[in-house]
Image (cartoon, rainbow, N blue to C red; front, side, top):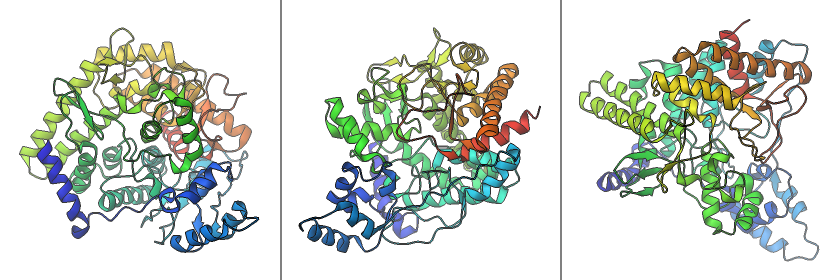
Length: 516
């Protein structure tokens, strides 16, 4: 593994020469330093992502020189300085259309959420994409990695195949430029990725032949997640080596600083924790990479954010995604005529499947659970991530039946599947429900013949979407599932966002499967 890490690092130096990567731009917090901290800690904007997305009106060196000069003057106003030197991002509103049926609304929203190819420019946090793409909506003004797989389900369903292909091409280009797909196409997201759904996107849009067509990018994606050389019982970046030599993956971020988009919240969480601030910042960033930001899954006491320990967790969903990537790589190499590599990746997938079934299956609870690698035990926190081994065909038939029973017992609510059974105030916990987990659960259950429960989840989720749409005339990123007709979703670091890419995509797909 050490030789492999050295070779990969050496190859990384050659990537710009070979046209496979470009130097990573810095995040605004790194570029603006004290100015950025002053703005975010001063509370100039209710949503700290606002300043992260702002466009400076002059090159940073000149801007910082102006700041150093002006702040020394009597009567200096930070608010006035920012207003003069930055163009703030605009968040287009979503038109309420209660008179339309939901399918017509979704088709119309593909045009509202569509962004044209970006123009490359300096001093801006946006990483330009060369083809059109769909954004989630609201404060999320850029493409997001794992969101897009579920958005693309709806695009394919609605015949927007060309746009889905454009999005796949954009992700392939991000891998070529940076060696991985960042959380989103912003410079402040480059230090981390998100759940690796690229292989699933390739299958969805390009079919079986896509495994060969996108093989170099699939390999680069895998190399990013597997870069590291941990010794037995240790960890290195996204990699963890258990004492018996089993290799599995965790979420991790290259930086140990407050997130640009949640700067003040992260500083406050670190203060409350009593732990080293850099430790908390990396744990929060790793939680953001998971897409479940935040959830009891990552909390040491299962309740309070300052106890976050994301990097101590081997997540069942991440390792199912990595197994699937190994399977697609095996297919790609087989189609390319490289039998040796095909066999090697098939063996890796089989070994990982065995590890998931051995370490993450809870016979007592009838679910797949995360694994706490330092403590060598399963996490006690149950979550809807238990559906991933069904979606990817890793569970045994007996395990699938037990998962179905556990979902009915612990997760099924009037509006669909809750994310966890725990109430923490975090948005990825009870009583909230999210579109991607409903879709993965429905398709995973159907794969194992649990059609009745799959249909029940789909009907409940479709129902909460349609009733909310009838009242509000739009779709939202998440829903409260216990009293969905009277209580809005909440929790987390920001208000519920309208739009919404993955909600639209999943609803379009499920309504086509369950038209009644």
